[in-house]
Length: 107
Image 1 (cartoon, rainbow, N blue to C red):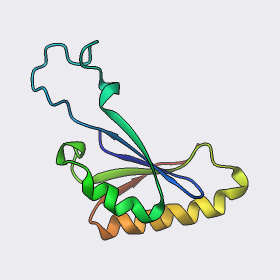
Image 2 (image 1 turned 90 degrees about the vertical axis):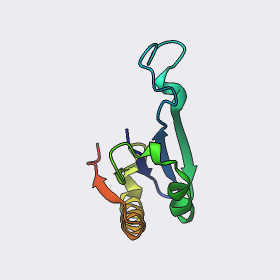
Image 3 (image 1 turned 90 degrees about the horizontal axis):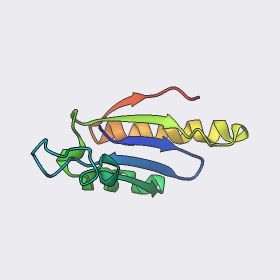
């Protein structure tokens, strides 16, 4: 699974699932090797987005340099215009880094 970016009024939530370091399929997804243990969620300031993405290991980009972006589902509806501006600014940053953006619909 590739990174996923959820955009709010003041922060960005970056969800990443790292690849399993063990190449064997034995026990994969079981009690000793749960996928949830490889999931990370980072809360970032918009200014830190590029640095955070550059720091991701290549294994975090299973399907190439593609990222899903969506407005935060918990954002206050009154703040929709600000969230939308933040989404557009994040997409611009991602495009500048050469990352393909797949924008997901809200709610």
